[in-house]
Length: 188
Picture 1 (tube, rainbow, N blue to C red):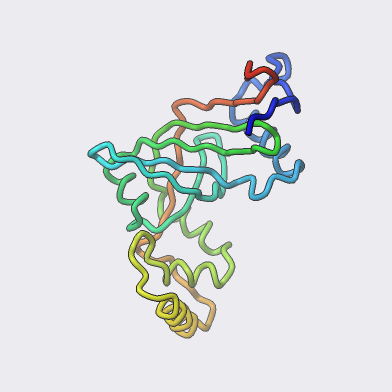
Picture 2: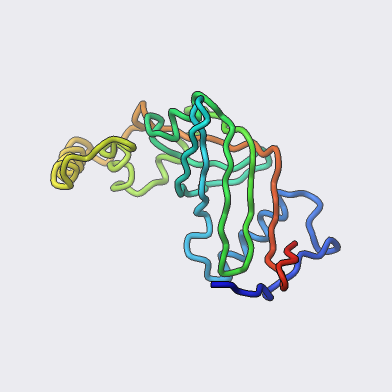
């Protein structure tokens, strides 16, 4: 159950001065290194009472302001972020013996940014946004599939609008930690 990490080191001389540039480097290395879904990040949110929740979401973009992800705004994460925008995310690039940790504040994206991303999604993914009521009990899989089929018929012309309950967030980092596993548990 214990592994000695030996793949790489984090050398100050080779680090990018800008953390977003370093993120881009590491993300490219994760893609090139065969990490499955390198844009998958574990996102932690907290309710106003302090109760925490964590789940995996896909980072769909990075810009100089932060990291983008999209979701059902009525989901547990959407409701928790609305009440408490402080979040943490980790990219667990275990195959490379590294992880990237971002702590910050989630800000809701403008409708134009949401639409720009939504129209790039495959048809079935846009239909799923209308179908899935995240964080609610599904009585049967069959009912979910029937609703999916109904939404496909409704939007058969391919013009699928963004649901009013669907949107995106940008995580504005307070801190970004680049963690590299090293031998003898003397990690960078």
